[in-house]
Image (cartoon, rainbow, N blue to C red; front, side, top):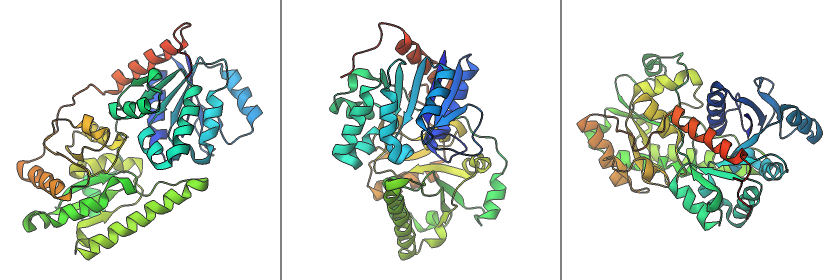
Length: 373
């Protein structure tokens, strides 16, 4: 089959783009042809990128016609496309080719954007033959929107780690961590990720435990485009508030912000970490959790959104917005020693790729395409 992806795409710094890159190459390794329409142009885009949504419509259509896709697969979230999000919906609605959309942040997007967000998702769904979400909680959101008839739950795969160029020892030296035990908060800095709850939890740790722990915030605020820059500004304000909170509690030296993490340092940070901490207040799913799985690092997480499914039965799963419970989980893990928990479901890249290809085949088979709502 010939699969055309519509998505952010490397070298752009975007988690959904990284997800698409891994999935697309896994699909190609199984004998299928792939091409990409990227969210935005980049001078160093790889050869599979045949156009961008920001380019002139006619040349883009001609490039797509030359590729002759059997299925179009959009990897969608409003922040990933910004002001071009409605264009994705219009593009998917073009007749002739079965369309699939993976909705990475449907719960967060519709909660944040409310009526316009719900209208956008309904519009996008009308042009699709299949919808994919990563969690049952996201499926519940689609059900509330009346869109669950097209939906399939395919978990986020455990992401293969990028090749390492740095080492944990080098990072410890660069950031002055010494022999302290590292709790890793990895990924984009975002107001919903609860870093302020994590700072409050640190104040509740026993003094001896606190004195040997550093929280490393390994990531930066996600860059936004167009009118969505207001959300970027909100996240910068959140980061500043977290820093002020740490200073107020005398924890400035216990909290380390690294800024953007190059791919070559990802493995080293997970190698340095005693545990990954996800103090999220709301969450659709978590690529960071799947990275932790890939590296065999234990996770302390809230039960927000899809995390409740991912960490069901974990002794280190706590309610969102409860710093005292978070502090107890951190203290327990550090006292008992880290151990990676088994996955309740097989989320290996091989399994998820096979399930996704089966979905493509189902969408492409005549007679298997459900009616639009």
